[in-house]
Every structure is written in structure tokens, then in C-alpha cells.
Image 1 (cartoon, one colour):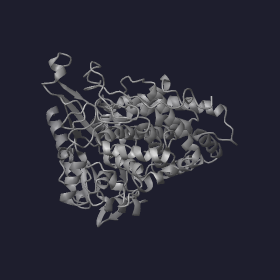
Image 2 (cartoon, one colour):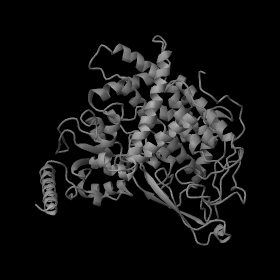
Image 3 (cartoon, helix red, strand yellow):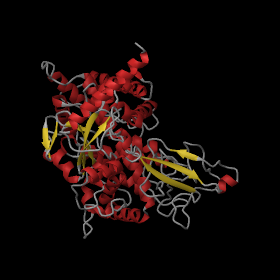
Image 4 (tube, helix red, strand yellow):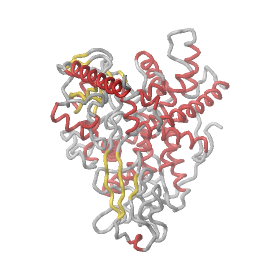
Length: 589
């Protein structure tokens, strides 16, 4: 038989099979747009604005609807009421982790993020209990966070007025806090092993959030048979696992069952106690995977939030001034904030909450799955169905947050200026699968607000009479790109590009070439038409002078260096001098 006929016949059978399956399933599931054979609704989704696409679908089909991402149905929940009803009121039924084939191949059902069933419950409960034992939400961990915040200040001071890219520093600080909890030691910010470890984590998060991995997760055969960046993830995971296992071996040699020092010690003790239990989920492989999960979830998310804060505060100087005034009144000039100060700093607390709400770090949450057949809002959802919950629709609900696209700490303040809690504040998700490190993240963000806004004044750089934040010949545009399966330590968030105008003064002088700078995954952008970012993907353009307004970088210090370098006038960071503290080497050594 002609091979071409065989191929055509096979494809025809696949298409007919796909149509039959979709038609039989759609009668039971919530309504949704008509899918195409094999590829589903991919062509109907704007990959540059997935949350926007979900909003449009919800206006047509209601808050519960079905999309086909490939051949499998995915139920989407859009809006506060339906998200709360599913994740909180029916928390047990919606507590499963949705299918992510790449993560399943890497983690093999282990760890805390991508696991399911009794293994997930046992690992999560142990993790939460151990973090509490180690002081999460208590003074012991807070001291560690404050020490790391002071080290961050010391690193900023080392710039001595030279151009500063704070991305690496802001990444090292939260990663070192996790290191202190997991390994009981911190690393110097110049430690090459530490920097490589962080780089591997960040690269994996970037790749996992890429459009290519979204395609791979919906067509799993591509993972095994196609070349691509997903193979880099495997290599990075092997490196991270080797790094963690090496640390585990070092800690095993000095383990004292009566005096556990860190997360690994607690786990090793539990492992000894569970050796006789054949059904126990505790193993060295599960420990290494859990540690990787904790780093992935607790490092990039916090550092990205801090970078966004450094973009938003100079963009809104009236907010910065109020935060600075409150910090000075409550803390004075030298003391670092602690969690007990939060109630006395309502505006600062509201600003931190507003940063998290506004940036919408994980807009579509990690995918959930139903653990059993369930009838939800008159719709039948079979066991194992993937469920996407739109956190963006909750964080930007206009009923709770008037003008949700505007950055305004007043969203979290009552008429008397006191902090106002909101059930719509769900950047850490909600329900059974909410972030296990929420308490630690809140502590880090509050404690770091002093180094970010208290040691140096932040202001606009190079603004002209029209109020542009960047050099007047630069024009920035934001292009949202929110991933359907962005994980808890990542954000397939926004892409941006910078177009240098043809009449650029520097271009006329022959110092730069007109063109476009693409940012990649980690672009730091805002929601306004002109966003305060100078080095896309890495750092905000901000300058700081001790306790007074700012000026742009000195003339001749450089303009557009390269596609990955500074764009526009370089900014300088000069922290206010503070007392020295030993922030090098490893704690406990």
C-alpha cells in the first residue's frame, strides 16, 4: 500500500477519534469554545495575554468553562466566588495537582509541589511542621532574615556609587534565607558554587515558564523525541540534585538526633524512624526533590517581587515618600523592621500587599486536578480533570479593588488609614495547595523594605517635563504573556520591548545604534504604557543618594551598551552608610 495513503488514513483516524472523544466529553463538562481536533483551543488563546483570553471566555461562557489544551479538557475557574468555592469550600476535591508531564518526569511524583495523594500529604505536613519547629513566623527565623537583609545592604554599599544591577543581590538574599533553613549556613554572595546553584534554579524556572514547555506539557511525546530547551532542565536538575545530596551527606556525618539543626536534620531523623515502615514516603530521593522544590518556590518569587517593588516605588514617588516617612517614624534611622512592627506600619504593609496584588506574579496558578468525580455548579467534572484557577481574576476584581489596573496602596487601607485585610488577596493561592512558605515570604518582604527603601532614597531617573521615567528618547511598551502552567516559583508574566527613537541624541552622536532590545522571560515591566525598567530582564533603572532627591547618572557613563545591558542613562546606587556587620562566609563556620 502507498505510504502516503497509509499516512493520510492514520491521520484521518486520529482526527475522527479526537472528534469523537471531544464530543462525548463535552456533553458532561462545563461549556466552552469549540475545540479543533488534536490541537484543541490553542489557536483561540492569545499567548501574549492568556489572562485576558480567559476573561473574554468567561464573559461568554460564565465563570466555569472548559478549554481543550491539546486533546485533554481543562476546566477554568474565573472570579473570586468560584475560585473560593472550589479551593476552599471543596478543598479536598480540588487538592490534586494537574498534569504537568515535564515536572512528572523530573520529580517522579516526589517532593511537595508536583506530587499527589498520600505522598504529597505526608511530605507537605512534615514540611509545614518542620518549618514551624525551625521558627517560621517566630523570632529565630526573623533574626536570620534581618541578618540577610543587612548583608544585602552591605553588598549595595560595595558598589560605591558605580552602576548597580541589583538583580543578583536581590536573588542572593532570599536564597540565603532558604539555605539557612535547609543547610544551616549561608553563602557569600561571590561564592561560585552558590551562584551556579542559583543560576540553575532560575534557568529551570525560565524554561518551565516558556511557551515551548507549555506546548510540551500538552503534547508529552515532544519531551521524549524532540530537541529543545527541556533537555537543559534535565541537566540542571541533575546538577541541583548532586549539590543537595552532597550537602545531605555532609550533614549526615555530624547528625545529632537529639539536636536537629536544620530541615535536613529533621528529615534524616524522620527517615530513621520510618525505616521499618514499608509504606513510608520518606527517602533520600524524596528529600532531595523536596529541597529543590523549596528553593524553586522560595527564591525566584521573592526576589522577583523585590525587583518589581524597586520598579514601582520610583514610578510612584508619593507612595515612596509616605513609606519612607512611616519607616522613619516607627523605626528611626538605624533599626530594621520586624513582624511586630507591621501593625504600626499600616501604609508600608499596604504597599507591600499592593505590590504583590499589582504584579500578579502567578496569574493562572499552578494547575489543580479533582481527586474524585464531582458535581460542581451543576456541571460534572470527572476525576483527574485538570483545573486552572485564575488568580488574576481575583487580584484584579474591580468590586474589591476599585481601578485594579492602578497601583494604589489604598486598596488595603480603610477610611481611617488602618490596614484592611482582603479575602481577595491570593498571590500565594488559597486552600489545601496554598504556598507552604507564605509566612516566610511575608517576613522577608517586610524585613527587606528597609534596605530597599530605607537605606537609600529611590526616585525617578532622567525624567523630562512630560514625566517620563526613563530618558526621553526611550519608549517602552508592555506585552503581557501569562503562562497557563506557570509554577509556584516562576512567572510566565510579561514581555517587553524597548524601541529607541530614530532621533535619539546619542544615536545622532554615533554612540548608539537604533534598534530594539528584547527582554526574555524575566522582563520587569509594569502595567502602564511607560514602565520604569532600564535593563530588561534584570534590573530597574533607579538611582539613590543618601536622604535626598536623585539625579541621572553622570554624562558619558554610557547609554545602550548591548541587548543585555543598560538601556538609557545608567543609574547609580549609593546606600546610606550604616554600621558594619560580618556578612561573609557561612553561618556556623
